[in-house]
Length: 142
Image 1 (cartoon, one colour):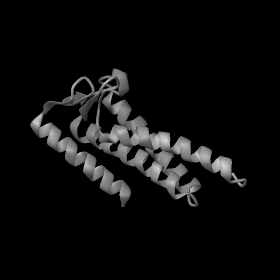
Image 2 (image 1 turned 120 degrees about the vertical axis):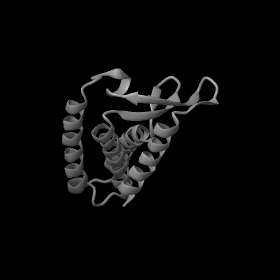
Image 3 (image 1 turned 135 degrees about the vertical axis):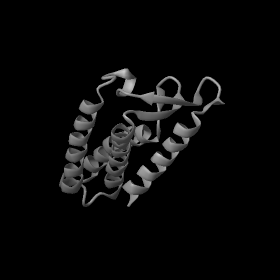
Image 4 (image 1 turned 90 degrees about the vertical axis):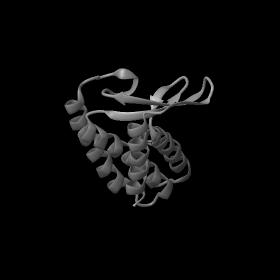
């Protein structure tokens, strides 16, 4: 259910950004709302390779789903991190499938333009690393 709610939240924000194409400075030199259509991956790689990115993303998401169900039954925090990664990945794939590009709307200096789904993937992955190291450090069964 968490995954579905995160996807709905991200898609709602993207819909608003797509409709209004905002351009607003929130924190000068640090944070802006800036609409962009991303046809590639992070940092402009694979631009215009939408079909390839859809297929690759779906394969990665299927692999993550398998890993999620096989490895995280005992660890709620790790499960939540995987859910964030899955929700972000699914939401961006939905953009690619239905729009032909990913809607980005947050310009964060020095990283560039991203969206909530990207942040879910990044912070979910960071959380996975941190939580996994915590489990390894405290659980002799792992």
